[in-house]
Length: 169
Image (cartoon, rainbow, N blue to C red; front, top):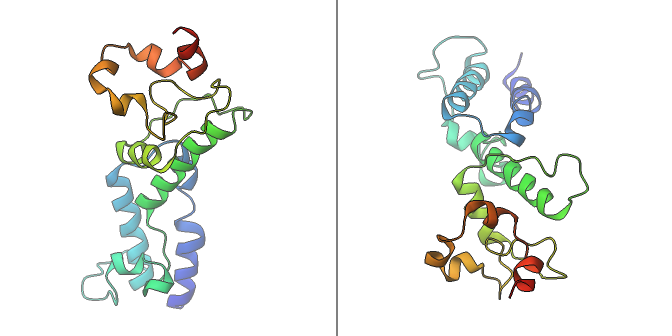
């Protein structure tokens, strides 16, 4: 098989298979490294042999988009971050989905990215968390008063909505 055909296989099959598991949970670094090794060997030598001295482009460069000089191979770590961020977004915006209430474990980087990239426009306050959502001038109360938030139990922080918090005042 030509190298261009192997590249198509990598993009459409070998990189697509782990996507479903990456939506709900991040792949461990060793798994990403192993998948990258398999793909790298398949692309450059088309067999399970050493690729030393046979790689035409560094793997990080191959994983760049074609517009940036790469081969357009998906970076699994970044794809995992994007999928988990999308899951958080859908949990926040589409509570009618059956899986929206399922808790998922996301990386700290993903949670930080999501929190800094989004804010809440407050309607009736029933869908916004009082302590953790950025509803107060695009800032979360936990960012304004971190010492005060530590006095609040995790259970209350994860459940109390803005409507409930303002009704108790």
